[in-house]
Image (cartoon, rainbow, N blue to C red):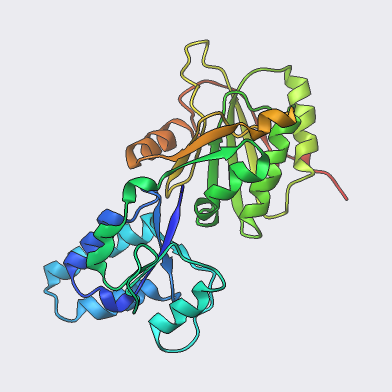
Length: 300
């Protein structure tokens, strides 16, 4: 499983030690996420813990909550009904399951854990990696929690090119998962085709774009050094390594052969963010195409 979503009962979190446990257990890099259930989940933790803390302890609490918010908490997308958290979690779990309910009134690991202490029963090594067929939906759907939490998404694949229909199929799935929120998608690939042909196909690609998405495609040339080689999808919150890229093969049989997706650690995300950016990528940029360039705008 690439990402597992946990519901954590706010009443279980009563101390700085509990917050530290959440910080060490949940992170996009580990593939374990905390559902914001209810929507004010973080605020409830703040209210429960802050009252009996010294000023220095409050500063530590803020730092822990900030890290948990930035690296682990995702929007639940689930309705919270009633005043009893356990009942609400069980009710909505029947419609849209969590991986685990922590702070449940039943004990059936890993689906139901009565307390935070029982997190030790979870095999955290089983998350953060998944093998999927190489079709557009299967490649993108596992990273949906990462996509839905970000306003800037970067993809690196030296073999991607606007001239390849196999790339377009995956991008359509990507746009579908992003939904209606405003988002910038940046793609970094290797120079492989005639520039005029690339620009013409990019213009066609912009016609598929929803109004809420801006697409920037940077064509790089590493001079044969191999600097541009790993296939990545990453955001400010985390990232995923695509073993064989985000290209859907044209041959149907090849789509059935699985490829591995695995989460990036924090250092890998930081390095990728430094190396691949719209301002100055670490590999020389041959050309940069943008969907907001007037040359690519089309009228309906």
